[in-house]
Structures are given as structure tokens and as C-alpha cells.
Length: 99
Image (cartoon, rainbow, N blue to C red; front, top):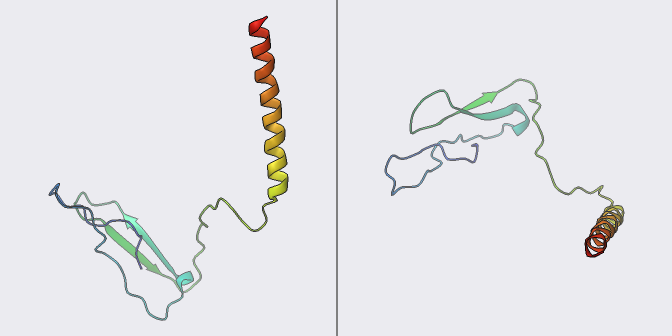
């Protein structure tokens, strides 16, 4: 288990950051674990902290662009209507500028 981000920042510019810190977990549900970065030290090495709880840890869900409840037809119609209005406005401006 890790943050998925690099934890080692080498001083040699020829080397790339690497993820070298992680936890090996067995038979512990993810709902009881929380992992986070620690920015407390001024070092080339970033610490990560693992919290193991007796209770389920509430975590923020990651934002998603699409879900199973999206009404794509309504979205399409809304975009078409918006484009019609903007298109009309642009045409009217062009007509006025030519006059």
C-alpha cells in the first residue's frame, strides 16, 4: 500500500524520483487503513504514514467525470441549445458590424 507518488527525490539530476516507501498488508480491509504523505521533514526523502483503525475510516471519494446516472440525451440537448444561442449572438454581432 502506498500513496502512488514518489517518496525519494535524488539530488543527482541524472536520476528520477522513485517510489521506494510502501507497506505490505495482508488480511486487513482497506476501510480500516489510511495512508498519507508527511511533509514535515526537509529532506530528499518523503515519509508516508499509515493509520490502522479499529473503526472504518471515512475517506473522500475521488471525483469522476462520468457515472451511470448521467442523462447523455439531456446533456446533448443542453449543449445544442447553448450553441444555438451563442451562434445566433455571434451572427447578430457580425451582421451589426457589417451594417
